[in-house]
Image (cartoon, rainbow, N blue to C red; front, side, top):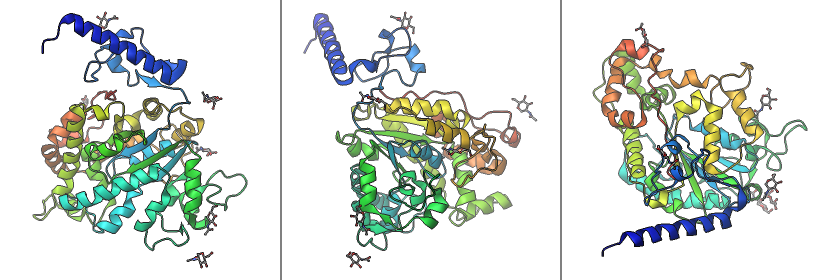
Length: 423
Ligand SMILES: *[C@@H]1O[C@H](CO)[C@@H](O)[C@H](O)[C@H]1NC(C)=O
Ligand SMILES: *[C@@H]1O[C@H](CO)[C@@H](O)[C@H](O)[C@H]1NC(C)=O
Ligand SMILES: *[C@@H]1O[C@H](CO)[C@@H](O)[C@H](O)[C@H]1NC(C)=O
Ligand SMILES: *[C@@H]1O[C@H](CO)[C@@H](O)[C@H](O)[C@H]1NC(C)=O
Ligand SMILES: *[C@@H]1O[C@H](CO)[C@@H](O)[C@H](O)[C@H]1NC(C)=O
Ligand SMILES: *[C@@H]1O[C@H](CO)[C@@H](O)[C@H](O)[C@H]1NC(C)=O
């Protein structure tokens, strides 16, 4: 069929009118098109691509800051040792968010007890179906759904075996925990586990329903495409923050943390000789998963529009407050004092060096983000760069060519690169 230019213009005008009406109806007057003078340059093409020059620099040119809007749910998609505990805390400290730290742990522990970070397609498929069902229930505050995965199975809907309960502020504050002194708002992780009575899941579900948003952090979903069914579910109104990190940093941190699973890498690092039976998929999986996400996102599928933001851990570490505001803007949530305060307390700039840092989160976040350069040998780095070359390029991490470059900390390996949410 031929399409005359008149028809095209008419169609364009009609769609602008409809969008405008819809936007006015849905959001009232606090709707904000763009922080730059020209709103025209901020419009979108037929596939949702941003057409404008200036707007590209702003990660939030189209958002709704009306607190009357629909309940948004949040999923932090990450991989182990990419800084996801830190990102989780950015939501945990918001009074209107019910935060859960890695509930999918229970699914994995039940279905595939010997998790090794390597690729096993069958395991992953089994995990995924169950994980999606559980996530859907949890966003609905149905915590009983978890019970079939918790061992021993909770009786009378109470348990003291919820994985990392203490990482969730909501689960460590009244009415779910009554062991607090009058001056405490919640208990820190260790205290929470020691002092709070068993978790009453009925009460936890009530506490979940009292909050507007549920945020869940997980490292057990391989790529964004695996979440399509949840993202498309209009009742969930789910938005995904995908956290990525330099794979060299992830590898280094895993070698330090998972001492058994990554034992052969430690031997390589110490002896300079690569063990013949090294499981290279432990590394390649990190990069293949990220690549699959990148490829899904770059095809700009309509189901992902407005629902996805990519965050580099290094950017967050260098500028936590600014980056966190961008994330909150994208989600359409207002940031709270308590979140800012937590960031100030736990990142660089904190004067209180002796403060309790019981989480895996870090005080000097910026320095910590690149500490891997002092820990990995050039040989391992070189090998990683070969396997992960495409990921490094896509995410703006510079490869090094020599041990000198690797150890020269005044040479940044993180290129300036902005990742505009797909809106
Ligand atoms: C849109 O941006 C381009 C440069 O990116 C500029 O030349 C043009 O004048 C802008 N259009 C409007 C309507 O401001
Ligand atoms: C938005 O939030 C403020 C403060 O919490 C409240 O006073 C106001 O009534 C809310 N507005 C709407 C439209 O819900
Ligand atoms: C569960 O509750 C019932 C009735 O209150 C009680 O008899 C039973 O002992 C409880 N079971 C456990 C394991 O606490
Ligand atoms: C858990 O909390 C609910 C709601 O407050 C209460 O009815 C129930 O008795 C509690 N369960 C136990 C085992 O204490
Ligand atoms: C930040 O640190 C101060 C001083 O140690 C403490 O009183 C406050 O509760 C902390 N706030 C948060 C959100 O961690
Ligand atoms: C480290 O990198 C900086 C910036 O490129 C360079 O000026 C300096 O000479 C390098 N230092 C060494 C010891 O190579």
